[in-house]
Image (cartoon, rainbow, N blue to C red; front, side):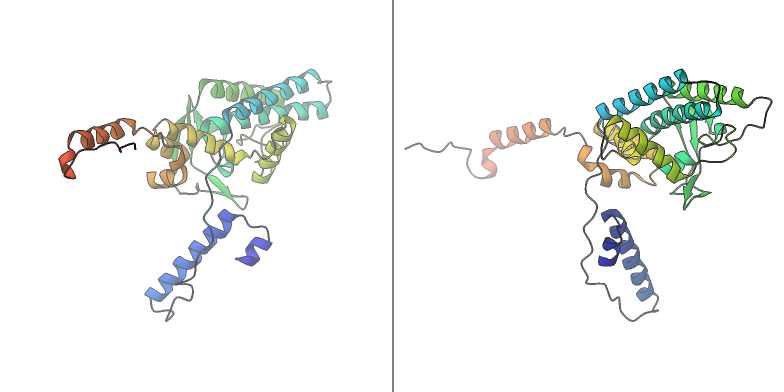
Length: 282
C-alpha cells in the first residue's frame, strides 16, 4: 500500500485494491489453496471520503464559459481549417459539459457515445471504455435515461451542423466526440478529460473534475429523496451502492419523529416511574 501511495495512487484506488486482495485471499483460503489468509487481521487503508460534487453555481459557470468560447470561435471563422477545427472542438466541449451535468454518465461512458444512442430524448448507455478499449459499462448493465430538452436540442443542432460540414466530401462517422470533422475516430477518454481540464481552467474553477459533475447529479437526486432514480441514472448495480456513497446527501426529515418521541416521553412519564421535573434552582 505504501508503494501504491508513493506511485501516486489515490485513496480510492488503494482502498479498492486492498478490498480485492483481501477478498481473493479469503477465497483462496476457503478453497484450501492456501492454509491461512496472511492479511486476515491486517487493518485496511482508510476508505475514500465523501463524494464531493461540483456546486450548481460552478456548473452554471462551466456551461456559460463553454457557450462563450463557442461564440468566440464562431466569430473567428476565416475560411481556414484551423479556425474551423477550433470551432468544432468548442462545440463539442459545450455539449460535453451539458451532457455530463445532465446525464451523470461516467467519463468512459461519455467517450464511448455514438450518435445513434439518442432516440428522441432517451439516451441509451450500453458501453464504456477501459484502458481505451470500448466494451460494456462498468457494471455490465445497459441503462436508459431521459435528457433535458436543452441538452437534446444542443446535441441535435451540433450534429446537423457537423454533418453539413463534411457533406459530399467523406462519410460521416458514428462517434459523438472526435478530433476529426467527420467523427470517424473516437476521442480517447484521456482526451475527453483534457478537454474538460481546459474549460475548467478557463472558468477559473481549480479542483473541479469531469467526474464531479456525476456526483452533482447524484447529490441533487438523493437530496430530493429520489434514491432509486439516482441509482438508475448513475448505473449503480443496486441502491445500496448509491446510499453508501451519497448517504450524506439524504434529506434529514426526522423533525416530526423527534416531536412524536418528545410527546410520548412527556405524556407517559410512568415509563420511568415519574414524569419529567425541571431541576430546582437554589
